[in-house]
Image 1 (cartoon, one colour):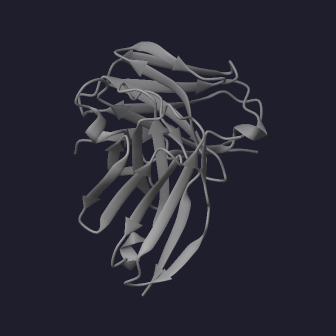
Image 2: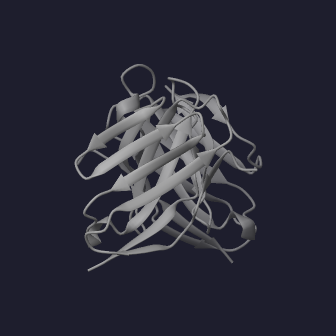
Length: 116
Length: 112
């Protein structure tokens, strides 16, 4: 299946822990993203990588660090987790530039992070 | 003020009704507009996109953009229970759409 897959789907962890979320896409897209969706369903971009290069880095605590080993993978590492980090984190991919607009983003199914 | 405002709903309609979903925005530089549908516990999926002002139709769905009013709409005709989901609008300034701003979504419930 062609898709954006992210793991794990659910993550429950204690405050202060460090955790990682992995994302892979097999669509051949050149751009990948991390979005955070809060309890009110507000979806906000965190990071964007194009061909392994960081191109968008929104105002996100530096406890969040993305890593893109190749253009098909974009992982998110979170240090010293806080209660306010609880949210659903979505990975997405797109083909940037001309011709890509009609396809928009392809989102993964999300990772539901709960910090206790 | 958020870049994109969207009424969270929920909006509850009977099957077969015409549904109107709307977003307003503040940035007059936005040119690319998209609508996504998100089912519970799933990622958003692209429904429609439009460029600049005007209408676009795809089956039971019609997207409208009124740039002068900074207002976009999604109409769903003959709504079905399977349309029950959260609908998010998204918009961007440039052709390179690396940075889209999303509304917070409107939850729609279509009752059989």
